[in-house]
Every structure is written in structure tokens, then in C-alpha cells.
Length: 372
Image 1 (tube, one colour):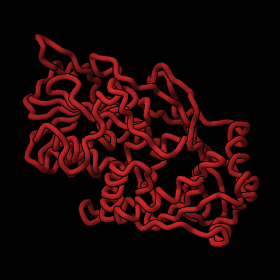
Image 2 (image 1 turned 90 degrees about the vertical axis):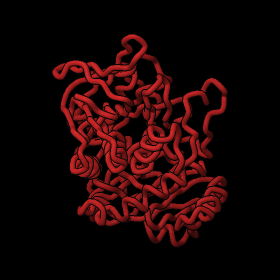
Image 3 (image 1 turned 30 degrees about the horizontal axis):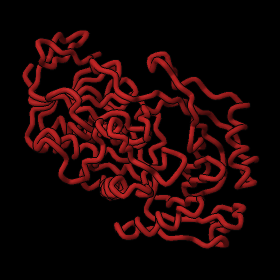
């Protein structure tokens, strides 16, 4: 089977890369042992926002947000729900909002009384509130499948099989369980938490577990990021929401294959999340625990992706650190441009692996790396 590009990984990033490469006329083969959007993409909260403190990443996030807003025009499905995002933080927030407004993000500082009215919360003196009007969430599996379906229409092929990259006579090869050895001109590895299993090298990526619980709220609300009390709430319809930690802590998992995302959190664990939320919103103690699940982040030392060519003709887009889904439209373009031109052109080339050797890590304004 001859391909211009072989992609390992059919989550939101790999499927977006396949779509963007197929649009450029590349013959693309995508391999994933679980199927399209069935890895950690399936367990993402799907939050989409331009709110980032790193300017270059905010530019990617704003492009991606606008892409999701127009998703139905390109793919025929409305995968995006606008809710708005309310952020509670400290003095960094003012500078962050100013930078985002310069980029064209619809965001502003909100006064305490308006925030209290919006989410029925206690806002303390000295805390700052930001409101991003266009933020929301998207159906992660629908998005991955839409990327893949359009890529197939443009000639890409998708294979369900286990695969890893090997070096044979100084040349990369894909070794699969059922389809033998596959060769392409270029290779893309977009496998998230399985990166160090698939690549023939060790990258600075830790696997960190996080939990999400679904709660009954009986009220509508925006997405809430509370950096002071370390929780997020993401509405799901008008009567329930997803609740989790902004910073999941160092819950290291040594083997992603041993992790069961369907291992439901217990009531004691759910109460811990609800108690965190109740420090801000008293009605959180009355939320009803419905169910929950787990997920894994592939985390780099600075909580930012790696997008580089660590082996000749092999593009790795890994270590996405919880940013992958919301940035997947931009990341797909960057992967395609790296293959076509040798480096990204549409967005800043800041995700090189060498930054960790050169002590030039990307720095967020916030303690929670997931905020960027």
C-alpha cells in the first residue's frame, strides 16, 4: 500500500491532519487500533475557547473557535454549542484580556455584580472576572468523524489496526499487527498518551489521569473556570453539567493501556469536586451526582504540545497536554504545512522539541497548565 503520508492516530488531531492533507492532494492512510475518535478524544470535555495567555496559542485557539462556529457550513453538522465562558482569576487576568482583545477575541472584564447575577456566585474583593462571549463546547466524536469522513471523500483511507513506528536501515517504517509493514514518504504520529509506545524514542511526556463527573444542576449556565478554587463547570444542555479540576495534580499513570476511562468515580470522589465548586457557588452542594468517567492527558514539562520532526520524515504532534481537541483545526493545518513546507506557516512555529533542551519553555500566566 503506497501512501504519500501515513498517520498513526485517528483522534481529533490525526483526523484533522488527514482532512487538511487530503485537501492538499496528498494520498493519506490513517491507522488507529480503536477507530475514529475512540481514544482520549471520546473522553474530552470538548470545551472550545480562545482564552489563552500565550499569544501564539491564543491565535491558534481563536482560529479554531471560529472554525467550530462555522463547522456546519463545511461539514453539514452543527457540532458546536455557544455558552460563553466566565473566568475567575487574579491580577494577571487584566493583562490577558487586553492581549486577547488585541487579537480580536470577544472578551471583556466583567463587574462583580453582573457575575454574581449570571452564576449566583460569591465573588471576593480583589478577584477579577473575564467574560468570553463566543466560547462553548463541541461534540468531540462528531468532530473527529466529520474530519475523517471528509478526508475519505477526498481519497484518504482509514485502517483499524495496531501500529508502531520502527527504523529499518535508517528509514522509518510502520509495523502493524494485521497489515504488515506500511511505507510512506512521510509519517505523522498523533497518538496522544501512546506516543512513547508508538515512537522508537522517549519524549518528555508524562501521562496524567483526570476525572470528570456529570452533575444535575437544574439550571442553565456558561462554562466556568475558577482558577482560585481550581474547578471548571461545563454545561450540558439546560439541566446538567460536567465538573472537574482545572489542575488534576500529578496523578501519574505508567501505562495508558492499563487505564480504564469507564471506571466510574465513587460518591466520595464526586463530593470532593462538588465541595470545590461550592466554595464559589453555594448551590453546588445541591447538585446531584449522575455519573462520571476518567481521561488521560499526555503532558509535556510546560503543558504545551510538541509539533516537530524528531526523526527524519516523521512528524510528531504529541504531548498535547489537554489542548488537543480545541486546537485540532489549527494543529491539522500546522501538520499539513510542516509536511508541505518543512515548517508551519499559518501559525507560529513554537512547539519544537528543542525548547526543552534550550530551556526556552512556553510560559503561561497561570498555575494551571491546562489554561495555557
